[in-house]
Length: 603
Image (tube, rainbow, N blue to C red):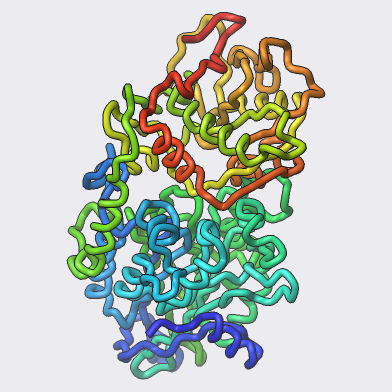
């Protein structure tokens, strides 16, 4: 039966530990030997352990694209899903001996696909007698030992997260997710497992879980006053010595945090978003770090600890269960204790194996329900709408998002003191492949347009602040001379800025002069046919990620909030299309902006 983790944590806290501790592995492992000689000519005991890791699963159980209603495929030939990675895990357990392996995840589990949305909102796990979450079913069946909390675990609220936690047979770890009032851990900080070795003491492995400080910004409305999220570095420095003093021979960190040392939210909080490499450098006593959050593939990264000179090995498997990380750890027993002799990391690819039939059979009914749900027809499109060139041309499909957001906010503020203010809206070209085909429009089509579970917020901005916002957004483009050839593949993502951190703003007219340096690109900015008045006040319809500081856009995070809601923007889009019945560009599309060079349109 699933453990009630909240009760378990409370009970453990009474002992002074406040942690989850697992029992010993079932069967003793045969220690290997080496020709190296120990004291008195004896060969030292040696033992090998393998720690497996996944991260950023984002609700992917099957090798299936719910937005395309087809088997998943990409240009690189990747395969994805827990059913697929389960086969890799089974192979490793067979090779190494299950009693010599540990299986971890580094977070972002219960958000990201229509499957996870369905069991959070349509048939919620929080309902009385509600279902067991498909990700809990799959991860329990596969036999995970522990998982770190990701930031997206909080997207559906704490009640959904706690229900998911209760359905798991392993702990969700978050040493730096603390109660806002007591500052004590709100989740188990760590997990300990002992691995018996024949003829020697067991090997004790401690896993410290760390989550992302950005949660305090991105899901502010859900966690403010309830939880705080201190920095990874300071919490690792607090807990790793404790784990060593408790007898840990091996310390592994599962961190929902990238390695770059950067933050997408600027300086709004003092804690680094992508801090995994910082932890390795600054905190002695760590052997390996399973990295998550940044959605990049890192087979093996070696970082030298600044205090001890020892090497810490980091690895990040590709998201969606497309890869499995293996940390192979070699230990030697000498002078009465186990010591880590070496750690190496490697990746295994999910496209090399078939689905585990145990997992596909387990969740076939849930999968079928979601496929049926996303294929519901909600309207008819008069023409095909696509995001193919939405990064550099004002595309009607993005205008649809802005029109829906404007309408929702206008209705929400009707009858208030802000009702007479003009409403403008922001939206990003999240995907380069979304398409709403001419003809029947399904929930699947609309979900592919808005892939995030963002909700809507109304903020109060001045014209001057809107101008600064647009200038910041325009930094997305690579500066291009008036006479240079324009290559659209090299025109965007300046400085590595992702597509989701470029915004259209509706209700205004403006040019973006990409021949100019960043900070002086917005030209001919008008509102209602006249040059924008810096003192003009606007209601800004904005998603909660941006409203809380995601992307570090100026002014919006600190601006007065007029209204917010918990209904997802994608749901609002589906409602709007359903009410209209017909999706026709003349009802929502307008050319608000264009790229220019020295006054001449690029396209």
